[in-house]
Image (cartoon, helix red, strand yellow):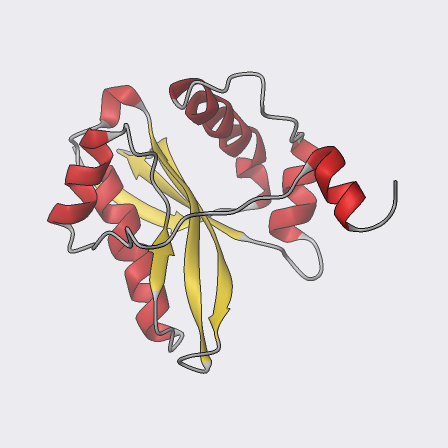
Length: 160
């Protein structure tokens, strides 16, 4: 069984949204997905796109995806790649699809002159953490993610 990766195209939107929903279920947040196909189409293929996606295929069938965008480091003075979501269907886990997606994105980071390739992982997802360590990733344990969303975002913006 052969794993290949390729940039997503507009015809992949329904597949990507399906993967996003499966990922949300895996991450114990099945009702958190509010994205629609039009949202994702605009985000991935609008002008300018907010993010990019890569599809992993096994013998021509989509089995995973990576959604990413560029971030920026003032310390290095150059951009990096932030991996927002990496997902491989349960039946394809262990097939090399996850590694192929990471290798694809690492190659893009190098080709685009990026200083970093970063992502977050849930602390309870030990299988993913072990996988990432095997790929050479290191934990940034001294950092914690902060988020403002929903009503708190509106209040912070002074728009309540």
